[in-house]
Image (cartoon, rainbow, N blue to C red; front, side, top):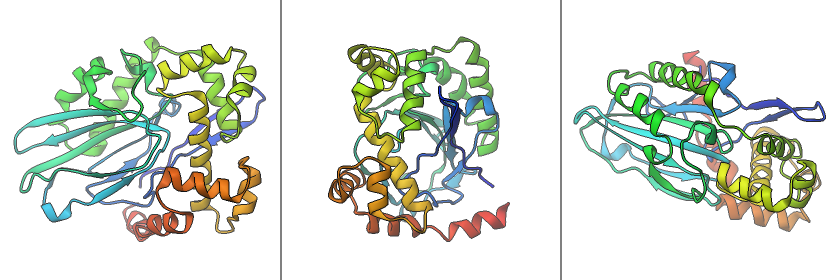
Length: 301
């Protein structure tokens, strides 16, 4: 059974923080697409999950669906493996600040598979050789940002065909690099504050609580994450709201207005739709269309 993994850490005040960003279809599961949790706890600070196909499958044009991609405060490295042609293509998807529709190009009759690594937006930079500046809504080749990772991982993806095998390879690569990764205490402290306050924090207050100037903080955020502190706060707040909408059967908009620091009900509903392209009722209905997959997962566990 795939294990749901969130980022857990203690803030400077000692309070525990749990943050689990969700996609627009958090219950989606199939042999072609499933999420798998992190095995080694040392990596949970950086990686939200691994995802992809359970094993290679024969692609049928009719099986290709259009996906709704929402801002989930994560970035992805996605490898498309064509076993028929023995090719592997990889792309890096930077952090998004808007929803969009994605439809994969069908390769009818080909034996294919997918393997992807979903980092927290602040968890990818330590493993990258290049800055993440200007990666907002970017879709580029993996080597342009993660050359070392790509050189080691890509050649093994044709040989290792199951999701479990590929996760084991990727985790070993990341663990081998932990001793030499690049980190910044100012970014770490700022992210902890954002998560602690569920995004309901002004950039000015964030800089003050992180003991850094606003100008320097914005420069570091653009380099390490690809967006401004203010934008990350707004996206984290939206994701915390979305998580509660999905998980809390007693969710009330007026309670959420106060809890997440929105000006009023209209402000909350307007900002949610701006990021999700649907209103709350539509978004929840869209997410729960895959809820039958819960039984599917339970039968496999």
